[in-house]
Length: 200
Image 1 (cartoon, rainbow, N blue to C red):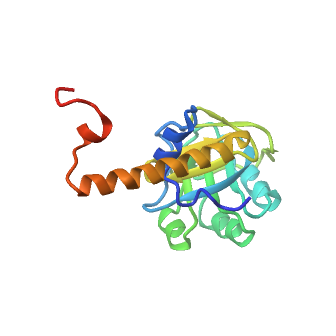
Image 2: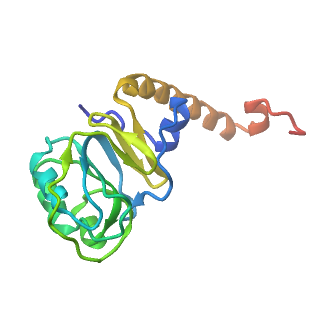
C-alpha cells in the first residue's frame, strides 16, 4: 500500500469516516512530532515479554506498521535496538498497547512509536508471539491490513474495507476546510459559515 494518509490529520479522518475508529487517548506518541501512517501488521505478545516483537520485526513485510498488543503492560518492551532493526527492514513504525523506552533515541532515529507509556522495566524472552491475528489496541480491534494513522492528536485504525471511502471523504473535508479558512480570513464568522445562529 502507498501512503495516501500521510498528510491526513487523525481528527479529520475520524470525523470524515463516520465510524468508531479512534483509539483511546491513552495511546500517545513516544516523542514530539512523531507521525505514523501505513497498513498494520499485527502481533499478539505478552505483557512484560518482548520476544514476540523481535520475531515480528524479522517477519513483518516492509512498508507496514507493527501493531502489538502487550496488554497495556508498562515495561520497556521496545527501544533503540528494535527500532533500528525495524527501520533497516523497511517498517514504518510501531503502535503498541504497552510501554517503550529510549524515547530520545527513537526521536533521533526518526522512528515513530505510539505507546501506552514510557517505562524502563526489563522484559522476559519467553513467548514467541502470534502474528497476523486480530489484536486489541486502545480498545479497538485491529487486523493486519487495516490503515493506521497517528499524530499529536491521537491514533485511528481504519478497517481495510473502508480505507478508500474514508480517504475520499477526508479529502473532501480538507477541501471544505480550506474554503472555510478563506472565508474566515475574508471576515465571515463561524456562526455564519456553520449556520448556528447568533444566539446558539
